[in-house]
Image (cartoon, rainbow, N blue to C red):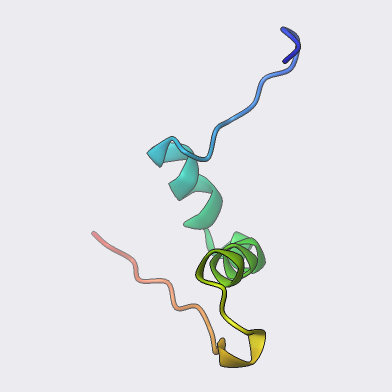
Length: 53
């Protein structure tokens, strides 16, 4: 890896939450879950975000 390039690793909990926990990234989360869980797209309904306080 080049020294001038910086990457945010999704393995880090904070980065994972920023990437997948934002409703603006719903499509990224959908594709991630479909690939990791190996779900056929026809079995997918929707993603619902719950706001915790």
